Image (cartoon, rainbow, N blue to C red; front, side, top):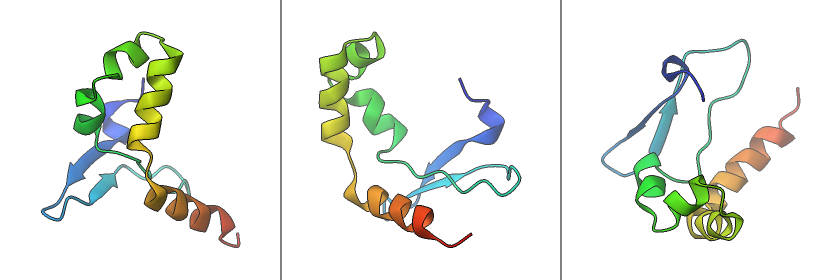
Length: 80
């Protein structure tokens, strides 16, 4: 479980997720695939949380964000 002081998620009017956190050295910002509330409201969330691997697969497949993958790829490919 992550301390609440390190991670806070907020949405703006355009529904773009804007994770914010207290800086930790040079660690990059958080990139999320879905809003926390959207995840928790998903019909397979409780089963996935309880350890149901198939339900977890459905949850991930339904909430997967290609945009987030592209942002992660750009972050990884940045020269250090």
